[in-house]
Every structure is written in structure tokens, then in C-alpha cells.
Amino acid sequence: MRRRLLANVVLAVAVAVLAAGLLLTPEPVPEAPPPLTDIAPDSIHRIRIERANDVPMNFERRDMRWVMSAPVSAPAYPARIESVLGLLYEPSHARLSIPAGERARFMLDAPPVSLYFDEHRFDFGDIEPLEARRYVLYSGQVHLIADTLVFQLTQNAGFFIDPKLLAGDAPPQRIVYPQFTLADDNGSWRQEPDAGLAADRAKDVSLNWETARAITVQTPIEGTATGHIRIESGAGDPVEFDILSKDDNVILGRADLNVQYHLDAYTAEQLLLKQQVESKK
Image (tube, rainbow, N blue to C red; front, top):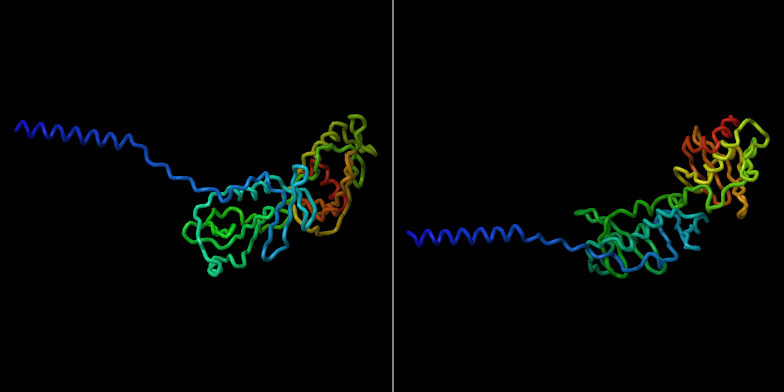
């Protein structure tokens, strides 16, 4: 009896120790998938996007800034270029050895989108059905990655153009509207001819132009100009905008870039553009 009791006690202690060990043992952490490449984004100087049903887009890094060089020449949208460069370190959830003769099954024989970083080529194929990940061919091997980039790569070229109306850091010194001009006279802004716009308000308009951004950018330009605006900063050539209107929307076109900027009503009001459009009606 005593032996059986002692055995039960020893067994209970052993079970308790084992259970405590299981509770204290941390669960293994899943190993993170490796990145698609080991290429540093800062080492890239050229980007090319080829689409099966659209014109290609080219970008170049110039003086630490990205510019679109085709199909139009315009400042690139920094955040969206960074998003594209993010492909280089995108997690590769699977690496598949698929012979070249079998890649047609994955739309990799004639990919809908191909992306080039300098000499490095990435072909985007179909989506696999289980995890909705995208097949990508890089350096002879097929990878499965999150499908977050193809939607961006198939947008109109305007999607990748900087929505900021004025590039650079030089503030406007003179803004020529169809009906009047705003001019900086040693820090004091004035309206010519004077139509009752206060100096403080004129200065605010200038500051608004420095930071103004479009809600969308498109190329090529469509529509007929109803007026023109010239921005002079003293740094480089003046920037010329055509005032385009469609319904109640205000659109500014830059003929030199073949790009048009679509503005929301608030921004148009802050730039004194609504008045320019309404005066033509």
C-alpha cells in the first residue's frame, strides 16, 4: 500500500514537472521568408516598366531625384518610386524550379508586366489560387510574392508623376493670372491692377502655390484652354499652366510636359483658380 502510494506521488511529481516544462518552453518562431533579392535600392539608377497593352515607362535617377523620361518627361512621384523599389526586398514565400518550357502555364512566357531595375529583369505572371500570391520570374527562378505591385504598374503614366504643381524649392516671385498679376515687392505682395486683394492674402496665395498638389495627374493633356497662368520664381524658366475646366472641376495643364493636374475645389480656391474659371462662363 505504502509502495503504491509512493509510486503515485512520484508519478504525479514527474507529470507536474513535465507539464511545467511544456508551459515554459517557448513555441518556435516561424522563420521569415528570404527577400526576393539582395540588391540595394540605392544602387539602382534606371527603372523601366513594360506593359503588354500600354506604352512603357522609363525613369532615371538624376541628382538624387527620380524623373520620368518616357512616355513624357516630368518629375516622378517619390513615394510611388519607393514603392516600386520595394520589390527588391519583397519576401519570397516560395522559390520554384519551373522549366522554361512549362512557364506558359503561369503566364511567364508572355508576361503582362515586366519590370527592369538597371539590367535586372522581373517578369510578373499569373496569381496562384491558394494564397493569391503572384508568380515572378527573376534570374531564371520563379518566386511567389504578395500581389501588391501589379495594380500600380498597370496605371496611367500620370500615376507616377509628382502631383506637386511646382518642382524645386524656389518660391514664386510673380504669378500672372488672366485678369491680374501678383508680384513680390521686397517681401510685400501686391496685386496689379489693384482689385482689392489684401497684401497678406496675396502672400498666402504665393505660399499655397509652393505646396499645392493635385489629387490626380494624367497624361496626355485633353481639353481646350480657357486661360493661362505663368509662375516666375527667378530660378530657371517660368512655369506655364493652361487653365482647363471640365464640368465644375479645375484642371491645370502643362503643355511642356504634356501633363494635366486635377485639383480639388479647396486647392483651386486657395490658388485663386475658381475665379479664373468662373469669369470665363
